Structure formats: structure tokens, C-alpha cells
Length: 368
Image 1 (cartoon, helix red, strand yellow):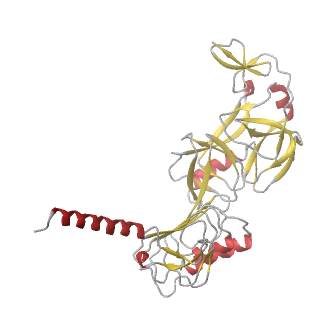
Image 2 (image 1 turned 90 degrees about the horizontal axis):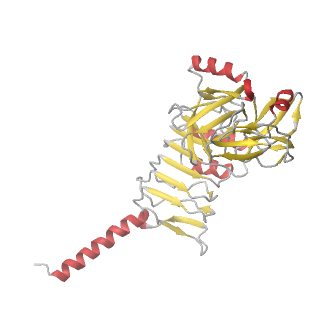
Image 3 (image 1 turned 120 degrees about the vertical axis):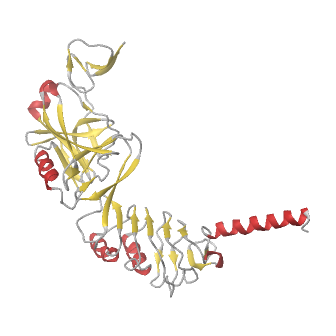
């Protein structure tokens, strides 16, 4: 008969074994130096690992580093670092990798080497690449050759172009911190969730009473400015599918809307002035479109153009939308504009104001 003390000891031993088994899935690297920057290989505890995370401190993954891991490994994550991979990391082990999450800090050169050495072309389902550091178009175009057998490829929307990815479904990741923002990217995207998180709008005309008419569209057209409404109201990532052009009805209707687009999109940093021909240039700043004195628009953003003769008659300092964004490198016009009368927050003149917030003589005013 097992005594109470022996029974307790067995329970403790079993708990330690279970703990070690769990720990083996996450702490299974041996490092080659005291600074933990070089991975030589996996410990024996890591042989049955399913998920592995490479810490951000790692600078080099040596050849044969995964030689002792079993074929159970399905998920590999690089946790914010930029490790260099030697050419024979796998050794003779056949992996069952399904997901590689590259993270946010790797250069395109190191990503390309990693995908090649991990056999991404033979056994891979999903590649998630959050971003690059110091990318070059030449390296990026060459790297797509390593992704031809992937089922899903998720990239920052700013990096997606119309490269070939075999039969993979390619998604562009849009990250929005506020409720609305402007964007401009090289490729066209559709929301497969039909706008459950994001809605797309284009300002198309100035209507009566100084209102800007906006039109909803169902997809983002490449190299065109568009406003994205984040309906969640919080910081969120949304992965939109690269448009394959199959829905010709939607594209025809939306393309006609884009013809009247008052937004000008840029895919590289672009210097603009206060005006462009007969138009006044406005950018998003602290929740509204503001006129500018000049500056540089960051890449993958859009600015609004309003005919100068129309803007001059609007008698407002800004066009207010519920935006939360900041265009850097822009000199905002700060001098007061002579405003007479009372306006609501959309810029519409109000003859008999009721309860609410209004703009009176260029300043916010609250009427109880």
C-alpha cells in the first residue's frame, strides 16, 4: 500500500514532469554565448516542441540548430529581433512547419535566407510578415520566390504589389490606431468580411451649405487615396485580401466613384505646397482636415484638395471629421481665419443654434 507521504511525493514528481514538458515547448534553445545572441541548437527537452519562439536577443541561428527537433514543430515565431540564419539550419530533419511569423524587426535579406533554409517552398501554410527594416525592392522581388508554396501570405499593405505568390492567398495588413484615417497603397484590396471592421469612403464633391459629400466604396483601389473608417473605434489590425478583379460589377461602380475622388494619394514621401493649381491642399491633423503652408506628406497617406474659390467662401479653419491621425513633417497653418457667424462641427453655418458644441468666431463654443 502506498503511504500518504509516498503518494504526495509521486504527485510532486508528476507535477514537475508536466511542468518540464510545458516548459520544453517554449524554452528549448541552447545559446552559444553568455549574451544569448547565438543559437547553436535545441536542447533535448525541445525535441518534441510544437511551437518555438526565437527571442529578440538572438543575432545568429547556426547551421544544424534544429537538428534535434522532431517533425512535430509546426509554428515558428521571431520575437522582434533580426536574426541571421545560416544556410543549413534544418540539417537532415524534415519539418512540418505550417506557420512562420516573422515579426516586426527583420531585414528583407535575413527573411529571405530564413525562408529558404526552413524549406518554406516545400511545407508551409501561412507566412505572416509584420514589417521590414531597410528593405529593397530587388531583395523583396527575389524573396517572393520562396513563398510560392504558401497557402496564405500576410504582409503589411504598404509592401504588397502584384508579385506572383503561386496559388497563395495574399493579404495586406492595415493597422489603424484611430476611428478614421487616409491611406494609399500600391495594390487593390477587398474586405472579405464586407466591412465588419473597416469601411472605405471617398470624398467626391462639395455640396450645398459647405458639406463634403462622401461615397462608400467596397474596395481599395491601388495608388488611389481613400478614407478608412475603423468601426471598432480602437487600435486594430485588419487583413484585407489582394483583389483578383473577379467582381467586375463592383469594380465598375467603384471605379466610377474613384474618378471623382478629391483625395490625392502618395506611395512615397511627397512635398506639396499650400495650393496646387486652383486647389487648396488640406491634410488630417488632430481629427480634422487643415489647410497647410507646405511640407512633406509621408508615404502611403492621402491629402484632400478643395477648389480654392470654394474653400475661400467656406469661412472655416478646418473640415471636421472624427479622425485621429497625425501627418508628420507638415507645417500646419495656425493663423486665425476670419470667421463670422456660428457653425456646427461639420462646418455648416447654423442660423438658430440649439444645445451642443459649435464654432463661434473661430473658437469652440458650448450651448447648454
